[in-house]
Amino acid sequence: MLYYRSLACKFLEFSTRIGQRPSFLALSVHQLARVGRGREKEIRAKMANWELKHCCDHDQVVFIATVGVFTVVILALWRTILLTPFKLITVFLHETSHALACKLTCGQVEGMQVHANEGGVTQTRGGIYWIILPAGYLGSSFWGMVFILASTNLLTTRIAAGCFIVALLVVLFVAENWTLRGLCIGFIILLAIVWVLQETTKVRILRYVILFIGVMNSLFSVYDIYDDLISRRVHSSDAEKFAEICPCPCNGVAWGVIWGLISFAFLCGSIYLGLVILS
Image (cartoon, rainbow, N blue to C red; front, side, top):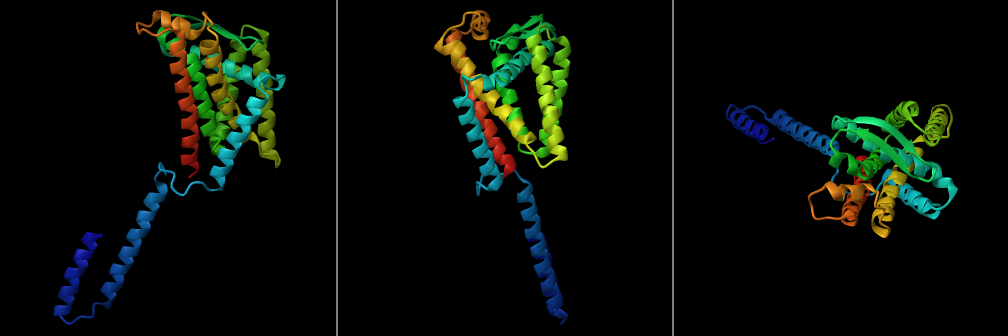
């Protein structure tokens, strides 16, 4: 803008000397200034609103309210059978995270099981053990964040649902017990029905199903860490095993606290980033 104004001033001075009328030039300067302001607004509109200025609009309020309602519902129904399928799917993502960490560290996954008592086990061989062990708890928190963020947009919701169905299909063929097989089949059918309703009717709840799974994963991860590692010490837990191989002077409870804080940070971060995306 300063460059254009400098040129305009020089040309204005020149035109005055030769007796020309500079009105057209003044109009051009005005137009240039208006274009510059328009470009500035476009750039600001494209930039992420990290400071959450002018929060919160309708979409952001709906997002926060939905997360809050889901949190209350999950905590209220925590001990009921209604949440059992969603708890088991969280255990599934926990074990899947172990398996992915094993594969990424050049190990081999020999089997995976999810039990009806909300327990699970992944048999691995090779890989980097100190990466595989924390991947379960932290991985489920990460997947919770992914689902929460994916629910902020219909396209990303579809992508998340599609990837989740593919993952369930893959695990269905490597599952070693019928609890895990039934879980995969049940959620494939559930997501397929919800997706069909999303595309063919006015019942558009796919986004909320993905968001619920995300919130459930985030809350269950934090609670599971507290239950297994802090309130009662399970000596076969991932944190206790991690404490045995880690040279740091931390026991299983200490690692449980650290992992719990990281998981809670994932949950808070997902809500903040969701608001940024919706702003």
